[in-house]
Length: 140
Picture 1 (cartoon, rainbow, N blue to C red):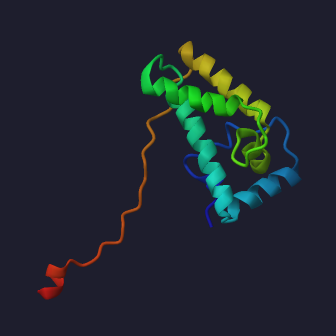
Picture 2: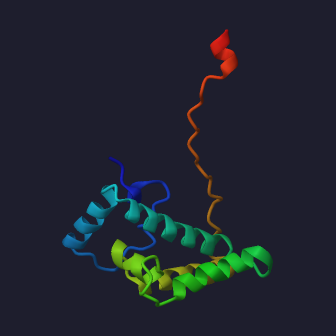
Picture 3: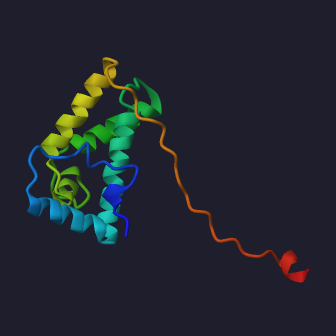
């Protein structure tokens, strides 16, 4: 069974803490391998926020800037009362919120100075719906 943290859009490299105990690593892998819908949603929310943050980090106006500000506001928020807040998701995914913020800020500063390239465009992979035989094919 494939792990969500082992896919091509693997964010674990960005969020690795400086020191990870074997127990923490085993728990993180267990969470990633289980097919828990809430965990899948939390991973998707985190991945989307990081993607929006990186994609629009240099935008100065318009919708793209608003999207960046929204993602940055969510990431910088220390609110823990909401289940899908940045802090809560980090806690469930066993990520250190301060380090994630620090890494994203560092990435943005390096990107603004031209030291890091922009992330590649993300291709949306949508499964094809199952096709039904048309009524004309059935009549033939």
